[in-house]
Image 1 (cartoon, rainbow, N blue to C red):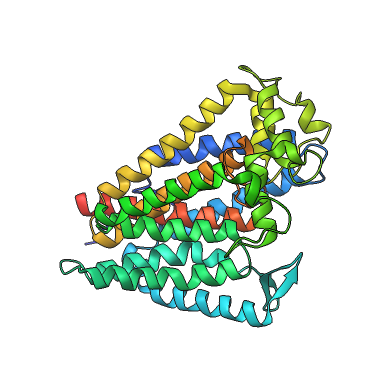
Image 2 (cartoon, helix red, strand yellow; image 1 turned 120 degrees about the vertical axis):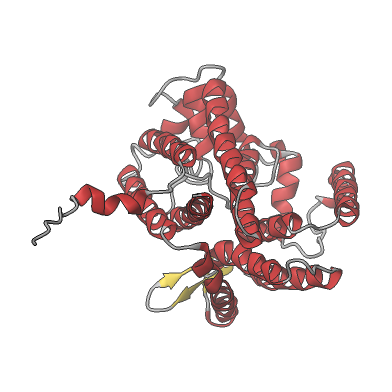
Length: 384
């Protein structure tokens, strides 16, 4: 007796690959990506091939997201220790053999020039989530000490390069994992109080400690100048305060509704420095105004809220800590970038996710979102 089997169609064959993708998270990603392309078209209009390159980088990031989303969290956990060790080893190699540009040794030539610190943006939360997963059910104070040591080594190496922006991002990603793992508020509150006291003392004594020749412990001169510029950018409006002042002028000139798409004078007359990278938010605010900024903020809030929901429903401690850390890393990116452009934080090299130009940052973004999507898929498979 012959039995005929109907061959599945191509759509039926590939459908399982897309099963489990989180719809709300995908929508948030697409909306922010659209805003990024629209902004880059205007900000990069007379800036070579920035728009085309930005679109290509996004496609690469989406490809990485899609591939990583297929990797089960268990396999991601197996990569945690090797990736962390490779990242730290490359940071040590950078300190010894690295390429120095503009006084910073951040790059390493391995046949192609790479920036090893970027690896730690993903490796750090992976490693700490792996560590706390191993200690689940028996966490003690020494476990948090070990976690802080695991975090402190790469952060210290990155600060030494120096690369304060990346160090902040790696430090925050690691601290989010430690916080979600159950770090006591009795340890957090004193640190916050000391930070408030230190900032208050800095503001009150700004006139004396910002004088030329005064050295700050642990900070280089250019980092001191950035903090002092934040306190009073008008002291050097054509020098160190130029970036901050022009960003604030562009944001203010946008008003409520903005000047309109492709009509930003500060942007197209090239008053905004780094208008396609670190300061692209100023270009966005000038053309789309307060209304556009609120819409963009809501887009990031939607992304972060959905990511935290995925983390809350994750099936294991590892996936909860990893998803929570990666989600709040997007908050750090957005808060620090918008804050420095708006003049409420010192200028550091932190891009605005989806919006700022940059291939390496886009790859890291794709990796993070792919991991978040992988956690979402694993949750749905467990529920089903």
